[in-house]
Image (tube, rainbow over all chains, first blue to last red):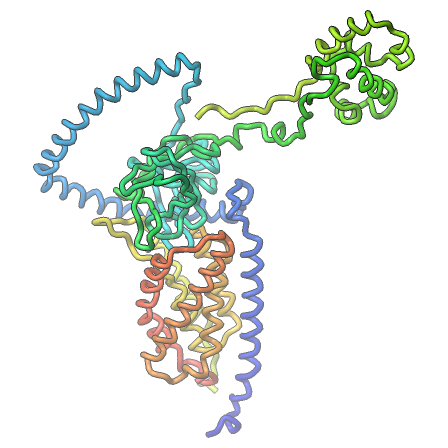
Length: 396
Length: 169
């Protein structure tokens, strides 16, 4: 029977077209969702209520499902410990012998370091509070490497907090909800972490690419890195504290420098979330972003110059100064912007001199000029309104 | 007219969708033994291919959209990424449906691999544009391999429902 003779054949075309239209609508919806996604900003508000809700649901589900695997892992470890106890004992004894030597060196260095800090008056790093959490779900694809930890907002976890395993840095928190937090691993393609090479103090950016060994980008300097160099967080940018262990350097098959992550030595089941607040969280961003008044420049009113050269500018500013009742004087910012640095001078001898008219100045004799010369710099070098210093982050 | 009876959506869309979601969650368990982790295949890709081969449908694209969004939520990736990639794969399979109908399982398997590769290359490009960085090809290759070995499940689904609606034989 040909297609034309088949009475049901005619039904094919409308349904196929309807299916194609449905596909187009779904593609448009997916594209719109993808374009509106702001995951890359890693801001708390960008994470979105939907993601928070899904994490809240997924965390307990993953926790329940992961329980048998944890038990199985513990059983395997117990068996391995039982049979490998003798060889492990030998290894640990050798390691302990080596570590004792390092302990003596560390004590001496710690004492020396403390003395230097006292001498230099450096602020010591405050202890960073931590929260222990368990990893309940895991994603390892090339486009996303994240994990869900079962500690969230109720325990003080915030977006940006670094996450560590017992071996080294794992990543950082990108989303928090009640009872769960989403951890972006160092291997995720969106992850960027400033690190330093311990041997040379050179800096690099650890860039995830979805594989197990993230790249070391932006390496600078001559011979900054060698195979096996230890990598620590540099603390640059204030996102993570300085000195967290990251891993060791290795040259990849593609010839690029990569990192063998320290956290990969063991399964990442329990993690510590460092309640470290980065610079952007601690600093008063409003004050930082406020346009500050430019510092006094080397003009006539700010440097101890001869009175002859200082007088014309004073006269000019005095002539342009708005009256107290004028709208321009109602706002300090507008006032300072209108009259410039001279208006910031402390009212005193120099300020009063600034209000003198040019005719008065012409009448003044040489002796008065000499007095003005000695008074003007004193007042001008003490600005009345200092730009507010930006709030600094707590030392790391 | 019993042969023209349309498929009940819950049978060929609902149940496999739930199975794919459960399998994804099960493979998301942080299990690691002897330094090896579980692979992470894209289970919904099986459905995106099989549904397109079984018959054109209005509901299927939206079911794929939902599954893609679930993957994005579960894996913590950019929202909409996997939804779009799966829909591209589904569209590719749907476009070649008339050519593939009645072919042997080997040809269908190759077609499935091509559809999976298309979806993953699309994902590669989208992620590259999104993060301005290139994802690791090796990691992508592993996920591709883990996904294409799921073809028997797609074949099983096709065998179950291919002849269920005579209008699309």
